[in-house]
Every structure is written in structure tokens, then in C-alpha cells.
Length: 365
Ligand code: IPM
Ligand code: MG
Image (cartoon, rainbow, N blue to C red):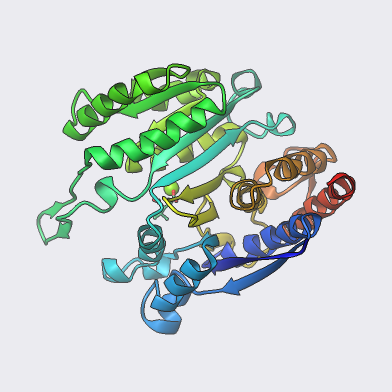
């Protein structure tokens, strides 16, 4: 049966368009394997949207995203917008679309690929076998709390969380832990922050509903240290918005590069947004050197969750492993002796490895 699936494509700024192009190659291979006709709808976000329309998140973009329900996003931001008023900065486009679609649950899987163990700054024996998931609250906390003001000599950001906001993200984390190794580490700063004490109370109150999940709590400063001391201890890490932003960048280095970390965000309905965790990297934009793997892994999540084809999606991992095993590397993950390839070549290699893998998949479904 041939079904049509829509995906809103928000390539954004910097390396965004380059990595999205490679992600789309892979998405087309997966669509073919599922006999899906892929309909992509491009829309503007970030600096490019500001240039074209005067706002980083045009109304039309929100409309297209809501109509498609599934969004694939590149990256936003450029130093040249640093002096714009806060509400016009590219980042507001990203925060705005997350809020507009009510995407409160952000998941960032961190997996150490054997072929990349030497690419990390950490010792191979520390990162071998790392397989953890950061579950980050995405629409609350310091990012959105009011008041938020900057005056000449003082400034305020507000850290606020309601019980309901904590419950819904904790529910996501508990359920994901149930599908994994059943360990949930909730990260907070309950020795100092009131929001963290509420966070801890809520998680503890919910724990009896998930008797199969082992719950622990960890202060965020300790969590930052434990991530590089002994990352294999973690399965699911549950965090509020700001802590998750920081810890997920840190955790990405366990994979060898921020260019390997995908990100998927969900709300209550079928809205979902898939994006690499990295930024727009304007200094390397347009040079065909960015690593497209984070975006390709985000496409994998799209197919696993929004298209409900997790077995097929897992072949993306196999394809990446095969390509890495051939010694192909983008610059950020290259070691002496590797073949350094560009963004496009890496995307082509993964798409073609995936095509071979999916041809046998298609014949069995
Ligand atoms: C991320 C990014 C964003 C965030 C920025 C670009 C607003 O760092 O997705 O981690 O802080 O959430
Ligand atoms: Mg970040």
C-alpha cells in the first residue's frame, strides 16, 4: 500500500541546509523501503527567515509545521545576528517552534560507536559500550520563565516549573526507561534550587507506578563529572531544560563528536521535531566539511517513532557502522589513516549502504 507522508523541512542557517540535504537522501531510501511517498514542505526559520520576512519564525512556518506534524530541522544562528534585539535572534525561531508545537519532551541518544572510540578525547576504555539517553524538558525552566529582562545594570531570568510540567516529562522518561535497561537517573540541584526540590518530590511520587524502573537522583554538578568518569553507569538521564542543554553537549563527546548527536522532540499529539543537537557552525558553513551523521540519526528517529518503523530505522545504525568500518570519516571524527570525506560524500555513502540493507528488508515485508 502506498501512503503519503508529509515532512516539514526547516533547513535554517549555517551548515543546516548541507546536513539536511544528506538527511533527506537517507529519508528517501527509508520511504522507498516502506513504499511511502515522501512529500517535503520547505519553510524558513532562524536567520534566513529573519532576512526574508523580518522575523525568525514566520507564521507560515508554524502553519506548515502543524500541517505536516513532522518537522526535520537543520540549525539556526549566526554571529552576525548577535546584536539583534533578543526576540529577533535566530534562536528564538527554534525556541518558538518548540513552544508552538508544545514539544516538551526532548530525547538525545548517546551511543559510542566502536569505530570512533579513538575519535573521542576520552579514553576508549571509558567510553566503550556507552549507550545512554538524555531526556530533557524542553518548553519550561529558565528558557521561557517570566519575567525575563535585561536592563543596563541588572538582568533577570526566571526558573519556574509546575508539578504538571515535571510529571509529563518524568512520565516520558519512566516509559523510555521501561523500554531500555530500566534505570532512571533524575538530575537536579535539589541542594540549592526550589524547582529541583519539587522535581525530586514529583519523580519520587511517581516511582511506585514504575516498579520495574530503578530510580536514582544526582546533583547536576556531580552528573557532569560522572558522565566523563563512568558514563556506562547511565541508562536514561532525566533533566530540566538548561541542565539537559549543557549535559547533552557534554555527553556528545562520549560519541567522539557533537556531529554524532541526534535530537527528537515530542509533545502530546503527533507533532514531532527532529534535528541534530549541534548548532549552525557558521565558520564551516558551505564548505562541505560538516558531519551529517547527527541529522541522519535524527532521520532514523523520525522513521522509528513518527513512521512507526523501528526495525527498519535500526538499519540506519548498521549503515553508519558499515561506512565507518570502511574508514570513511568527516573531518571532525577523523584520525590518522582515515579517509576524510565531505558532507555530501558521507551522506552518499550512508544512503547507499542503507539502500543495500533495505533491499533485503523490503523483500521480507
Ligand atoms: C540545543 C541548542 C538550543 C538550545 C539553542 C540553539 C537555542 O543549544 O538544541 O541544544 O539551547 O536548546
Ligand atoms: Mg544545546
